[in-house]
Image 1 (cartoon, helix red, strand yellow):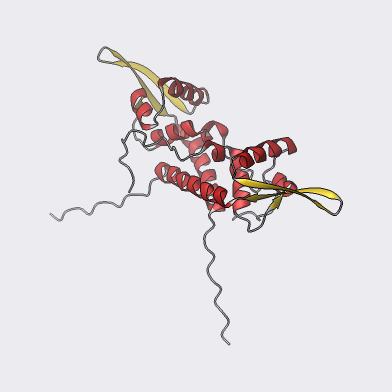
Image 2 (spheres, rainbow over the protein chains, first blue to last red):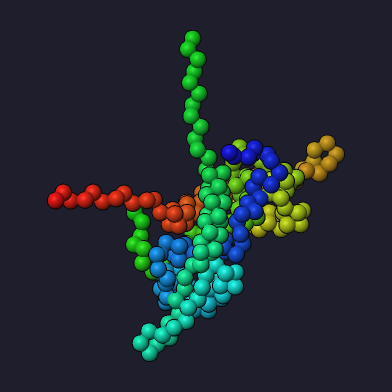
Length: 120
Length: 120
């Protein structure tokens, strides 16, 4: 049920967790949550159009919060970094998305059906 | 048409304008865009659960960008500040909301219908 439009804090959106709401991190989380598998550093860099430095910085923030796991390994002789959403990360992201949907619904309300005129 | 899932920059969300995406400013814009009229400083403060200082700071950012107009007046003998979304602000916010909807759709894809099995 929607809150009354004038309730204090009605548009405070406390659920827009700042860790997840930051634009680059939001893109990373969407990338990861839509895949059944993990993604490499290179794939994430391309999908989200980030520089190496920016990607590293944002992955560190997400890992520190326990939202993702960073797996360092090798493929052939080359180091390869893989990234995976944790289960708690997925849950926290879904809660964030629910709040994001609320923002969109609040801003673009469903058109209210025209009242049926009383017959004369 | 949705881009291919592996297109470079697929999840970069360039349309998530940082001026509008910031959580407090997003709440302010939703408050303003859902009203036919302007809102007072006090009403916005309550609706968005912001302190005087934070509200002033964010309104300044929005006004500097031409998204809102701040009208200083008096009611009775008391100073009253009213805030209104500009027409260009409304347009820019609607473009931002379209990108926000894309984020939600990307993250929570519509279930694809099961393929109809070939008859044997």
